[in-house]
Image 1 (spheres, rainbow, N blue to C red):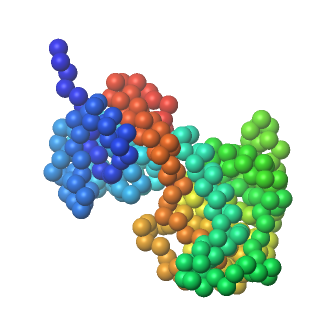
Image 2 (cartoon, helix red, strand yellow):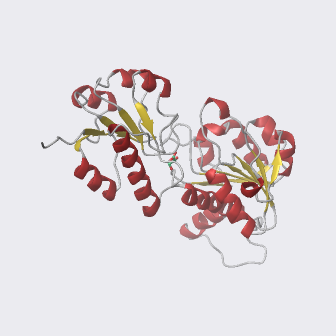
Length: 321
Ligand code: DGY
């Protein structure tokens, strides 16, 4: 007996390898560009088995309400899943799979790049050069801050934080971390655990945000916590824009209490707060943390593996609990 391939709704642009595999294993219905998600679901969801989305697609309770009873699994092309209403999906009997693990190296190295670029004024320098305003090398020119040998505070010591800690150690940085729980010694690798924000922030000459988004971490980096950082701190965020109170960070960048920041993620992407655009001491990138061909292909395979496993009645390793 020939069985029909399951029907997969795809709501975002995907890497070629993911598209090719999806087309091989599923009957694909793709959201056309320019069509909004709700209209697409209203017109294309009937009879579908699975949906593949990304953090750019908000799957709220109203969207879940448009999903047909045949739909058994939602895969998100991301490790973060605060853009989907987990409770509504679970209530509708729809399993969720994501892409944990495979993006740790890319995101950790990008976080370090943001720290370095901010500390060494790389964006500012490039703007000067491209504007034809570079007057030539000078012993006093564009002095930044060296991060080798400094303390790195990591907020959120999951896989990305731990990978970043390993890279930072190789640069002679002393790693401090704040996490829901202390890691076992084999994972902690001599990093200093802080059970309170005050001592953690005071130690964080460089601060990397590596925690998930969502209500528990919203505006964690607020004015009160920024005030506890050493003067001249450098900040990097390739995790989620919601972790930062933007007004508070802008104020600290203006006074120089925070010397520089590298920001890859924003609350209302693709919009970027105007105030950041006006500051020279900010490096801004468009959510590139996991954007390598290797990593995005691995994410595509993992999310399709998870979708197929759920449809086959199995419990995949990337099932969101
Ligand atoms: C994720 O996977 O959540 C990332 O933000 C994508 O880079």
